[in-house]
Image 1 (cartoon, rainbow, N blue to C red):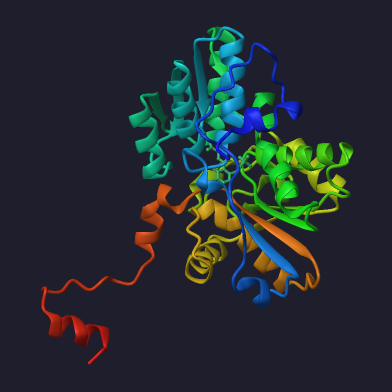
Image 2 (spheres, rainbow, N blue to C red; image 1 turned 45 degrees about the vertical axis):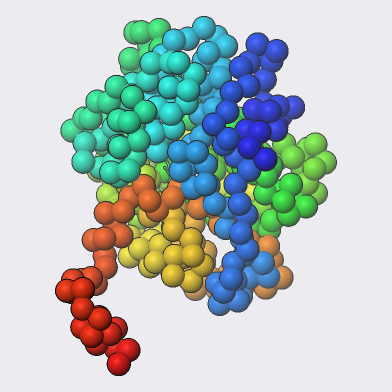
Length: 350
Ligand code: F0G
């Protein structure tokens, strides 16, 4: 507990005697069995992997700790990333922890408030651009050609290495791989990483099989589903508002090798799953995270039979990151005087 992924999974990671084993306590996140949705959806067993319980509130910390440790090991003094928010928060946290300079480039107005607050408070240098994530990543790729600075987006293979540890944890917790893994897809690094983790664990005989990988994009940002770059991606799930995923090929390989799918869900389906997960299971994930449950609901609606099957949904980040989505979609909240009678009447309790 709290050892961090570098120490816990060092045998599966690019850890050398020179790698600093620093941690903020990432990994070891809860795998929580569903209270009621499992029955409603007819799954044998349904679990949620709560990646929002990582130190900066998203799965990015697993990969960032490895990428930043390797940057330090190689003598780098600064890191840079493009981000829809979570990568920048994680880079900023681990960069400050390791004493590195951190620069982040994010799309203006399209990053959730909590994520921006994190990057600011951890002390990153922040640039916002009047364009989307894909363009920010293009700029970052160009900058690292010109300056001695380490790129820590998931095209840095150390990020994928760290993120695959979530698959290890699922197998360690369940005793084997599940039948199905539902996961949101944005830049596609995470689905690539999970697949790598499941394959490596099977090769190491820690698991007897691998799951079908079920990736879900948002309908307005679904380049892999459409088979072409989306120039102007649109979705309220800003974390996955990406039109040209860097790990496109990794995602397609995970889908094809596992016998899974990559599909999309509408913003309305994402929002419904976001509310359902909170109101039925007590799990507050961010909108992008709800794409995994929205995808599961969609598949069951289309006739996927999951009786007797073990299903895991990855909840990639905490809902606290993006409170504005929640507040925008609620009924008006009553504002009353501090009067017991009025409160009782409004609650319908008298
Ligand atoms: N869920 C959340 C909460 C995310 O922040 C992201 C990606 C994804 C899912 C999709 O993962 O990109 O590996 O397919 N966020 C990136 C960022 C792009 O910059 O924070 P992916």
